[in-house]
Length: 291
Image (tube, rainbow, N blue to C red):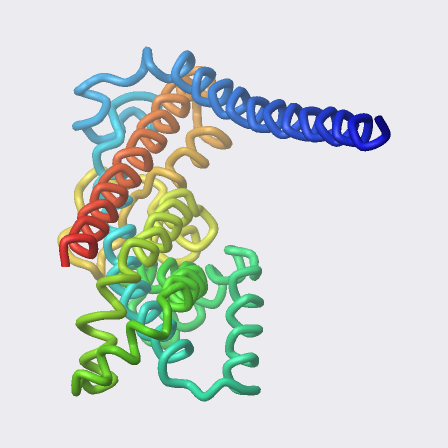
């Protein structure tokens, strides 16, 4: 009888714990849908083909956001082109080459600290280094490099964790067949870890696409109706444009619907980028399974 009562008590406590977990998960999903529903409700009326494909006019109270969309894609692409190779190679070095000891622990601690630095500090650093010292000026190049520095720690961490998850037997088997360490990493380890490394890319893109402070100091223009001609030009960007039309301007009542429309377009772009990255991850997963 005592054993049966103990089992019933354990079963009740387990059901209670699972119920709390389900409730918390449901609350998170409801909060997400509430935010999305609010943005869609407020911004859907402002979004149109003309809004997406035209430049802002009339002191930000009319027109569209096309230059800001293009500038956002430029910054996302530039930051990933810088951060992804640097982060992946750093993660490979820390997991595959560096001797386990104080050096790796020091690099890991510094990387974790770097990921916790506020983005506005990266913006000030990018302005001092890329804009002033290296002479890039307020440009897409300076903004991309600053955003790249912002997401490098995240890519390093996810790369290192992805490579740690691969069993050592795969490395030993490749080396036993006569492959060098570099060949083992390139042909065995990286293809197996690429799906999880892509996860780091998704998270980095999500963070970069919504940052305002770094581009405020390095590349963002308040009003620039024409598209940039080179990477040394300034550009508009959706996060900064959203901040501008939400906090300053000549007619806040006329700008507010445009702000909600801009927020909705930014959310859709992030969603599409994440879907594309997830498709890329599934592609690599299939290649690993077939090989």
